[in-house]
Image 1 (cartoon, one colour):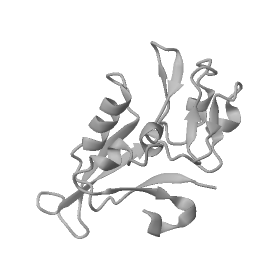
Image 2 (tube, helix red, strand yellow):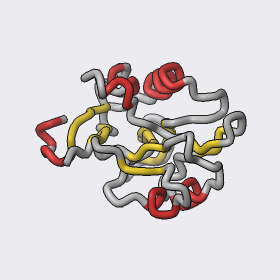
Image 3 (cartoon, helix red, strand yellow):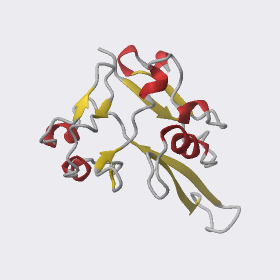
Length: 160
């Protein structure tokens, strides 16, 4: 079975937010909501450093749905709106979602949110519309630092 995923090389990420912007534009994510975020970690003192520039380091951490193999969000969904698709991604059938947010509460990554206009829970779809056409997810395609990689986990790291 296929299990698509995105891997991010934190040594390459420069925190430009192109992934977040591409995601919002591609998926019409409302202002104030995010399907993927980039967190700035630091500045922290380098080992044996004094904690002031230039003896500090920082990195950027991208946070989005991990499309878990055994997702808690799917287990707690009372309507089966949250489900694992044939390509291994975790998707939400908006026509079945009742907006109870059980999935959002059970997500260990905190990446689901209630779309208050539609009253349904949303999250990263891994740009299913793009991967179905053989394209990369928007966040991967727009990564200027070439820090994001897309592939099939079941085929190993060489597929990325």
